[in-house]
Length: 193
Image (cartoon, rainbow, N blue to C red; front, side, top):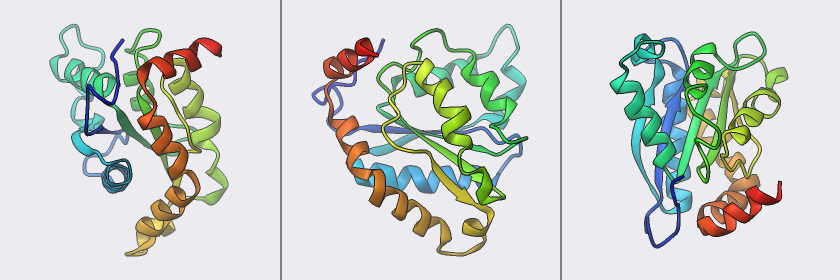
């Protein structure tokens, strides 16, 4: 279990994980942009970006050095933006296969922002209904609603920035408090569940 005490990391580390099975996807671009805004909001720095499609060939291999490095970077981060497009009204199998490699509490103490890219606003709850339970099961702290951006947001040159700003206006306070909360307090919250 990693510790995320403020004195251990004076500047929170932010990691991006994109679960789109297409290289150079809009999901990856949206996740990077959201991570930069989240890092600025919590006074942190984006340290690692994991585009899962680039390591997909290792997910089920006996030796998986790139996947293991990605798993470690995510588990050791203070904050993570975990992004997926909507596939069949849920998140991608690629992201599921990656998250399945963690044991119980593999993301204990990591504050996670689920980000969902949807073609249709009707899928806005995918992050809440499908992705959040998996992240919480892995021990992640998910203090806000999922950030959902639509294809229309991505098509508009300022749409993504507006969507992220609106999301931060609603949940930014909870996000900041979760990042600032000492690891010992997070352990007490998790134990109470």
